[in-house]
Length: 338
Image (cartoon, rainbow, N blue to C red; front, side, top):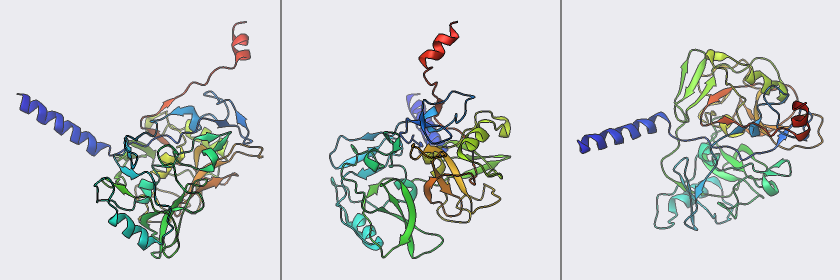
């Protein structure tokens, strides 16, 4: 009887693993902005700019740091090299360097995929700007991360085989550059994070790797950032009423680096793949004339800071996400008691 029970428990655990391979963690952002890009108390449901990154609580990025050399991501199961060697290499040298690495008796290190590299950036605020000291990474887990050059991934650009993808932790920019160029190397070990599968069911698409549900159709209309937040908040696609504008990590999780124009799985449809997608994550709250937020190129999968009103939207729901009720300002409490 005990053997049968153990078998069922193991089987159930395996099925759960197959249903959701990894958890998309929050970006770390806690500040909110208004339509002019100025810092404000986070809005309530129904107010302008509600639905931005800091309006929701997501799983916190956490690493097991019991070893000075290793950082184990508790949400992906990946083990990271905490301290890279600060040597600039071309792409082939970076691949070889990780393959030859022996650290804490482990010899199965590899250069991370772009999707894996994107799981370790961190956007914790620095006086209303994303990233402390403009270094977009958990500096306790990865204390010697460099800002003067990006870090290689092992992902070759689909648009140009001579290029490979990189991530810069200096302000969070991604792109692809010639493999003869130089960048830093941070190695990883563990099961490779899957891309999907993305399964279309009517007007929605389910990502079976992360448990997130997406709208199948990218929006057709051009929108500014407040309009994008309101658009997703008002959607009822598939009969669901809890759609939201994705934060930057959620949005990045949908990129398919094996294709381009658009760099999205074939389960999605888009009218104009050359346009960019908004995220709900502010990129720098300051005295602009409009809001600034991180966004994604549908065409190639690049991330960058966006402003203006010519962006499109792909809404998301589900995952381990709960709304945060902002504190009610003191004068408002007095008004309510009259």
